[in-house]
Image 1 (spheres, one colour):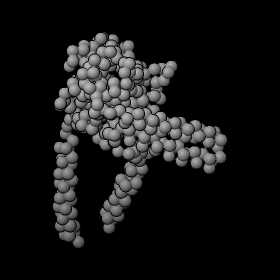
Image 2 (spheres, one colour; image 1 turned 90 degrees about the vertical axis):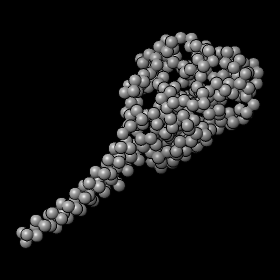
Image 3 (cartoon, rainbow, N blue to C red; image 1 turned 90 degrees about the horizontal axis):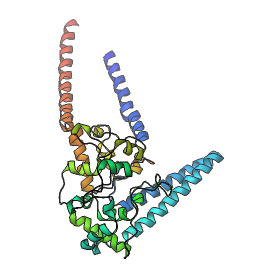
Length: 341
């Protein structure tokens, strides 16, 4: 009977921790967010609406408290959230008005030179070599500007159009960069023709030179290794690390084992929209299309946790082993104690 009481106490305590404390701690550390949305217009507008709702709730709470300082702060937060909603709604309405189907790749090829894209970016697949090496480029710009050969593979057309028109807005780093601290990549204001048509031409060109397939490793390197190391598989950030740290305000973490501390769901949401998971972070939104993002996460899983499936299967076998062992232990105990009575 004593054993049964002890067992019940263990079950109750374990259950309280497993179903009570752990989920609560998880909800605090990782608040629920909407799942990753690769329609970035909807993603941005929905997040902005959510932020307005949160700000309205916070303002009501502040008003109920009667704290003038809190009310003033909450009012400013609400005004800022509403301004962001209006800004993103207007921005994506403009991007959605661009008819990407009318883009002309040949005109886009001419534009990359006329618009000065190749002054900072290389397009190696088209014969445009980088103007400077990665170290020098990162010291000049904070991070080395990406080669544009594969961006048509990594990003969808609308995201590319948005990135060309307003990179800071699209990458969600306007909280960090402004008129006095301009974002290194300037917005494209056109080369003298119809701006939206020129954006469509550029997108058509980048799509035309994009490879049909890329390996998971190549997608990861193109998407993440301008800032992050993955030392365990010999992937290193391509530039001056001190410059990258200064640019981001912190040293970017090595991603070798990141998949073990952040599950795939977290990574999927974070890569899709960094501000949704870590408001105020200096890491830009990566903005990959769904296929490329899956490849990045798969490469992180293969590199940092390749034994996960085997480990989970072994765990089930071990639980079965202990269950069977418990039955035999119980039967053996009954047999021994039956003789003593």
